[in-house]
Every structure is written in structure tokens, then in C-alpha cells.
Image 1 (cartoon, rainbow, N blue to C red):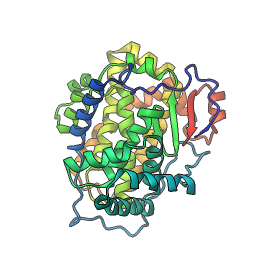
Image 2: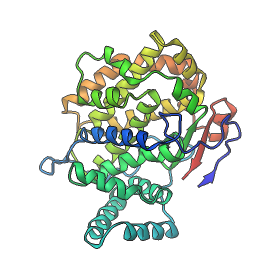
Image 3: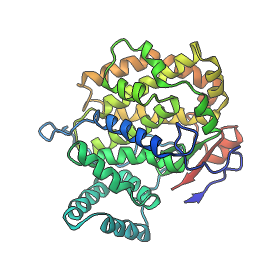
Image 4: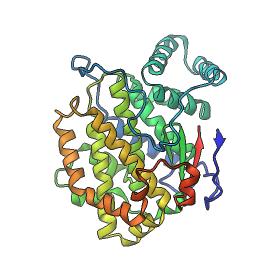
Length: 347
């Protein structure tokens, strides 16, 4: 990784501990996380090859919106890293599995380079990670790359930073203390009149705070992209729209009930800017998908709920004054000069 200037960060390189538990990663906590992840995987859609989406455009390899327009992502993998990745595949999989794994990875590289970038960079960082997700996915349902890319997007943040966005690791200032202070996601249930299994998984079992929910938004952005790249018809757009709805509820609850949390979030302009850009990227992905998935009543309903509560999101951006920066093509240094402080490393 090449370090980009992080001198304005109050905290240095993040410790290797999970975002939502500001303590050492014990075996008990890890098992609890895995149980929650399995529950989340059960909510993942299964691709129906008999119901593909008709589209004439090429597979979507790049987002319609970038995190920083001044820094378009670079998903290229150098020969040395690719050779090391291939060696790890040979080490981690037996001969009976290797042919299928290699074919899946090759197809991912051809159809969705961002997903291939996620798999390769995270496997080089954590050599057992791809094999672990491959085997865990196989227990739940037939193996597909969409779940693996989604989950390894999470672990990119788990091990390295707060959010693994595009080819960048974004570290939020004071992330550990901020996450420890924030209320949990089960507080949102009082605002949801018709609850579903997604709410049970993310808000009740995992109790995601707003940082955890934003990490899901980031991962589901990739899920929607891989669906377009593979021409799949699934419920990822509905899942992304649901997470976007949760974000508005987090801010509503903070604004109306948890005033200290609202103030802490407003004071963290690095988080506010990251939230704004990821939500803009999510909206752009759903706009790109419109007409292909929008016959899905769940997408329409979740977006309706999101729009009904979006005023809390807009008010938050105005309060932090990051709304003035959304349409500007600012460099990382220029953002820091304007008081938008977060760490950025290119993977």
C-alpha cells in the first residue's frame, strides 16, 4: 500500500480490531461475528438463471459515481501480486476444487475488475480469507462470487481501515471512540411498521450502528455492480435501498432522541463527507439499475421509505457544511484544507 498524507488524523494507523467492538478480537467475539454473518448470508438472493435481465450495455466495471472524482479508482493488479495470489490459490485448494475456483476468479476478472481487485488485495493481506469465505459460502448455498466479494469488502475494513471503498482504504477520524459512543441499530425498530428478515439480521442480531450500516451500504454497492456485470436478476438493489433507509433512521433517531450522538457525528466532518459520497454512489447505482430491477416491489417500497426520511440526511449534511463540497472535484489535500479529515490509503 502507498500511504497518502494522514498527518491531520488525530489517531494513527488503526489497530487490528473490529469496528463495532473497541477491544481485542477474542475467539468468542469472532464466533459471534461469524454467526451474525451466516444469518446475513441467508438473506442473500440466489441467482435465477431462468430470469436474466435484458440489457444491451456492456458489463458495469466502473461506478457511475466515484468516491473522489479527482481520484478515479485503479483496479489493475501487477504481475507479482497476481502471481502471489495464484500461488495462494494452489496452496489453499486441493486439485478437485482448484479448477472451479480458478474459473470463477478468471470470470470475475473479466466481468467485474473491481470485484477481482477486492479478492486479490484482501487475499494478499489475509491469505486464508478467500478460502474461508469460499468454504463458508458453500455451507449455505451454491458458491457464487457475489457473496464473497461482498463479505471481503467488509473484511477489508475489518483488518485495515474503516471502509474499503473502490481501491481505497478510508479511516475515519476517532473511529473507535465514535463507534463506541453511538447507539445500536435495534433502536430503529420503533420506526419500522412492517419489519422483515433483513431488519432482524442487521438491526436485531448485529445491532449495527450508523457506521456499521454505512459499511453495508458500501458492500451492497458492490453487490449491485456485480449483478449488473453478471446480468443477474436478484434482490441486491432492494437490499441496498433498505440499508439506505436505515441510514436515514439512524440520523432521525440521533436528531430527535440521541442528541449527543447527533452532535458527535456532526463534529466529525470526515465521517460526514464519507457518508455523503457513499450515499451519492448508492443513489447512482440504483439509478443505473432502474428499469431492470425496479419492477421489484421491495426496491420501490424501500426507496419510498428512504425518500420519506431523506430530510434527516439532508439536514445532517447542511449541519456539517459538507453539502457545499459534494459537487466539487476536490483532491484529498484540498478536502483536508477545508477541515474534512480522514485517512486515505490506496490499496
